[in-house]
Image: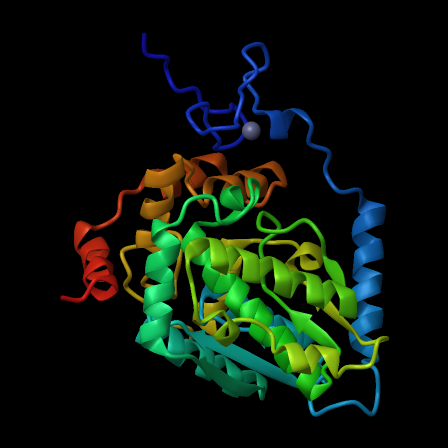
Length: 337
Ligand SMILES: [Zn+2]
């Protein structure tokens, strides 16, 4: 007997997703049932903490105060602009990872926003053939990433984001940069400040090494932080990762408007979830086919819960199909004849 799919009355999670239960009495998923919004005091505390950190970055260190991951999409472009608006003295190095599937428009947008904010632009390029092979392995892998990570992002995106994270931490150690900024939405992470100590760096390296091993990736040192760089740092080394959207609040529509006003151009990717990476639609479909989890459902649902997104908009985004042509194009690139 087939059971009907029930969608949570409050967010966009549904009963057909493994691990999601909708309470028959309340009509709510387990996340909405137990949700408590962040108090005003807590928000103010975060704000004060970020102001203090950025107001006076540790002196006499390297060339930069902040290394930022810049995809060229709306979120990171806006975050770079806002960061420089609020803290004009910051010396920012913006890193765009060329994973082989970034749209030309995203490259242009990233460079445009670096010029606008007088930030240093750096394009991180790795071996494209090896990357393609790694993404293919990620797409064929099962359970390389632990349970909850599967709700946060697809296996292919988790792989890509982990590579960026490893490389940016490595760069921060080398350039003695005290802060790293990621423009994650409040649906993608819950913690605004993360202190990376030396043992923590060693641990995240080991963790990703294991995940790559599970996927069958052999060239792991290409993606991991350099072991010698970590071991040569003084034991008291600390890097702070900051997620500014958890402090500022998050309004995608407004960010997009602001970005367009500043000269940001919208790429045509036939993909409602991403404005920068051609791999994304394929990655979502692949993830869904493997686990029956839409990799944006949890993120968008958290945004609804926090009052950052309308439920109808999220449902529309999640139920927009992908163009077969876009999917086939990625398939061709991943499996060249
Ligand atoms: Zn819900």
